[in-house]
Amino acid sequence: MSIKLAILKSGEHVISDVKELVADEKLHGYLFQNAYVIESRPPEFLTEEQRETGKHDVEVMLSPWLIFSDERKIPVRADWLVTIVEPVPRLKEIYEERINVDKDYTPDESSEINFTD
Image (tube, rainbow, N blue to C red; front, side):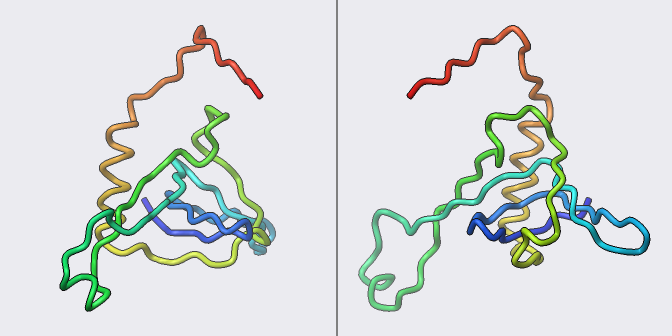
């Protein structure tokens, strides 16, 4: 597994198992498997010391990248990426924990989805 953090042109930060899509020795894109969007925010409450130093943790939330698709493998054109980097170790751990929880998820074909305005 090659877990990477990708920043897309859309500004989204996506963590995923990433593989290169190569044909005729040319990179055409990437295959994202089990992709999640990363959202972060500072904690709601800071200590006096954290306020003074500006050093504090951030809260991280992972959401499935394409919530209206059941596909787990998604091709992404190479020109849609700004960069791909190694995630910090703690983010990688959070991602691995999340995919282990979600690995048994199989969408129920009989479930109804309502799209409303």
